[in-house]
Image (cartoon, rainbow over the protein chains, first blue to last red):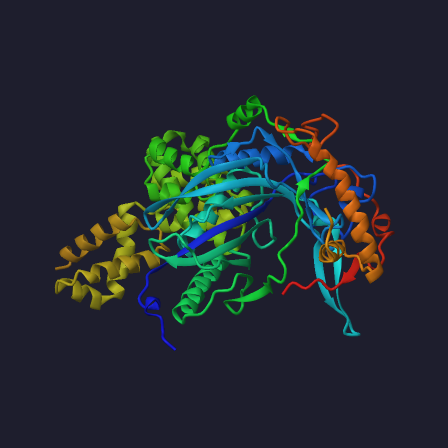
Length: 499
Length: 96
């Protein structure tokens, strides 16, 4: 057998397209008035004749879901359809009681958009094919009972929850770029406030189509669909694994089958899920129970007018308006909740006496540093913090006015975070006010010098490190309250006088 | 426009219907007849008519996003061919 020479040293590129499903945060379901809050309810309690597809039931479109989808379309630079309608997609599994899903096929609400994704300082424009609306399916619980019977239990609560699907063109060129694309979509739905975006709970999920091709050509090998990626990390890992697997197959001269593969998180591999026995026969046709949508341009304009500022715009404004670095502004605007907290703090009465840019810089340091650490450590959402914006402002003023030094400030913040007490009270109760009085510091310095003759000798021999050590000792004795600058000065004076 | 037996078998499978050999012949004829009836529509010139799936002339029928009470759980499950506790029980749905 002759090994094909063309398989050697070929530079392959990865071609990825993503389909993202987003549960919308409407109160009611997509086509009926049952509550969409499926996860908190006992099984099969948010269910009505429409959910069950009973004869004579009539679905009606949730206007809020349509508007949310239009917002997403606009955020992704899409055209909003002038004529749109829903279609019936035949679907023979018991997680849809009707036997079909009401989706959109040839007239999606939004189409032809794009977003720019920055990965390692390279900006790539990812085209958005379409954004459409459909409905989620029931939850299946897979069971094996004591008789060894294998079966499934169906909870219909989730069935009919509005699901928005965002389909990209195959413009993504690496797993890392796929991760950035997803994080950007996630940020957009969170900023728009149209979904919780919770990936673990399945409110934001992603399927990928991935193939490889010789760089510079347009003919790809067979593509593989990858499912079951439940976190940004899983998306990155699954696509990296799959890109590598496909390269190895091709290099061995083997065929890549067109198939669906599932990511297995704990094994960190993809496995074949279903070989396409016979192609799905969805038999789409226009949904007869739902009249079409004719979307007037003034409706689109109205929605456009009420769109909130998105992360990138906010980031650029923070740089412009507050003089923050691009890096800090990016971190602050990663979540809308943090960005909002930042701006509310900045508007608090406490911070009105500081110059705006100074206040912004100090606040940014505290929020991105110690406060962020405390949030992560305790796993508390920023919207539930006990620290009100005014309390945060007061702390920053105390630190800025040198009433407390930085290390005491951190202590105050932590106590504030745990107890909800204001900075002034914590400083008084814990006796944290900075010692700036020279005679008080001088007393402590003398103690430190007396207790550490070796360090004193080292310093006199010209070892600068010894000074730092002595400052540290003073801090230890004063519990971090002594002013560091004054302390260093007084130590030097003492050592010179002592000669 | 006659349907083949294979097409009838395919349609039966999609509809999850088990049908006998005799049924297949019968449905072949019947379904073919129905299709022929629709062929009559080909006689009409629809070149300048937009496709529609609607006869009501309605558009933009939407509802506000409000919650109304759902059915009681027992009513939801009352038609279940097979029930286990508060769930519908169905044959295993293979995921992998």
